[in-house]
Length: 531
Image 1 (cartoon, one colour):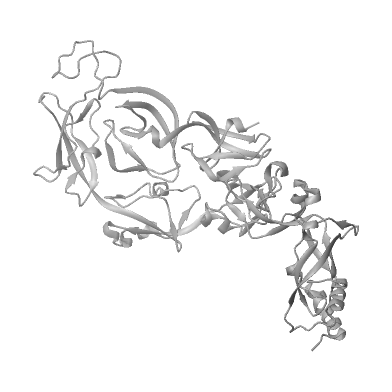
Image 2 (image 1 turned 180 degrees about the vertical axis):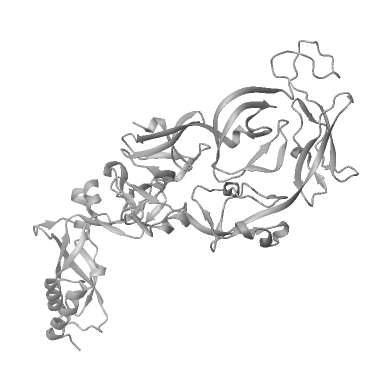
């Protein structure tokens, strides 16, 4: 059965809606199909092919494609897919066969390229789209105009540097820069925290887009300003403290007066910050544990305690005595870890084994000895078992202590172990990550540097960084986006700051020997990248 013109004209209504073919092409196609049987099997026919440009109608020379074996339906309808066209052109229209010839109209020097869009770390954003490229005007700026809209999350900073055209492999690669927003968390008109996060596809943030203080955020949604900053207001939250004893036994009956309707502030980061007055003979089990709110409750682990007497026994010297000290331990303890005992200055443990109770069950005796130290102020023989002269120093067990006045901060994302003056880890005592501490002394023991943050509590220099407080705004220098680093000097792979943007900084530190400004919780900007 043949296609009638009335059927095809009716089909124009659908084709105009679907946008698959313009009216002129449909009419041309209808004319060329008139007389062709849609069910007829196409036959191979050698046809002379003439190529012309769509703009000026000029003949496009392609001698090697002047004769082609094409699939033809009926006498004059050519299957478009069987036509070979010159490189760098796009087929636009095909005439019907006349005198064994056809005319093929081409869009001049248009070619479809695969589009690959990546971020500054070469992570793929989009590799599913194609882009039409005018080969007669192979311009990066023209390609930039045809790029899809990727919302507010990314931007093209410099087309010349960010666009790569691979003609041989028909690929256009575009590197976009991630847009970051500086979030300032406000509590009582004071900034208590900051972070840099990726801009959503719109300028609007919801609580789920933010990573800190979620339980305290006032607004459901906030909008970033033109300078890519946003202020998020925080408020107190009323919670119930759920107290748990050893082995997670509920002991709420002992804490009924302090557990309910507790007002939590955004500044409270760990359980010690709660500043709750526990009943007598109780203490927090993990004071540095971060506060976690689950269904309006904060679980607080506590343990019963008892007080014991600590007696000191100096090895090989019964004349030297020290007054006994009181020590608070867990009520169910059957021994005491040696490194938990605060021993007299200038002495060290004979061994680090657990110390059993004396027969009275209320005291322990700790064996100590004169510390084998050398503070560098004098030279003397330390090892009496070797034939050293009096002006020699021992290369091992050397301890150098110096006065220090400054502040250190623990690296985020981890608890930090505390050590006593002998370099032994203190069980049950840790510092929370991203917490700040005043230090008054430094110590180098066996080549390891420590800062003293309490009477007999030291932290390794590798677990903290020295800093000075800052309250300033820094502006990134011109050029490409600026890399960010964590407090250990590692590159933050999914973050960066655009050139010419301003950021508040609250700390300045030397990290891996380079001066850096802190612009978010664990994001640091090199001083060389600042104007």
